[in-house]
Length: 300
Image (cartoon, rainbow, N blue to C red; front, side):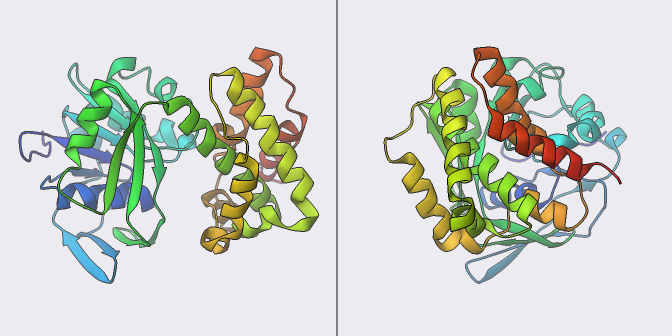
């Protein structure tokens, strides 16, 4: 049975796509050698950043039977792929394992509750523009940031990434506000762009401005009921973000729909309606887009 060991910490990355590949590379820069748990093998991990390409000799595994419990698991699949990752999680998680859930949405801890105690799970808010050119070949546009709660497990995860500059881990006091602010970006940008099959700038187009504004305000009302706070100019600043340099970026949901893949609308949009109903807050715009996304995911 194999597990990766480096500097006293054994680490496994489950799902080595754009995010998982960038995280595995950053861990390599920090002196670790994580085990890469994937469906399709590749000879070597490669990451390009700031005009420099680095290669990493991290062990690659395709069979959960080849691994054993580790100190840390980074779950980097998309939220709707967790069932497929279950054999890896059962093999890798032991009594002392901690799990960094590097996915979109807000219910990170609940998604891994079958495998690990809540105080050993670290929800992560990932801001990292990267893409996969082919299995194991990652293009990272710029250094990324991951925000985690200011908890012992959150600080411990941040320490794993010390000594490198490709991905910065930031323990955050008001994690609730941070995660709901990211959800506004993801839920609105993901839904509008996936249905329009256009890049992020589509959210700020005049034709959908009122719809985008209504969606943001709807999600913010639910977020406030969960304890999140938003700046008075949050909506305006969000539109500025969509009009800025990232406006040409395709969201992963839009790219998945374009490429005929399943989308993670449940973690980004359906969850808003579910929590809204728990608080008695109507979310008609979000519910309508959720229904359209669900229909788009269904075979004809």
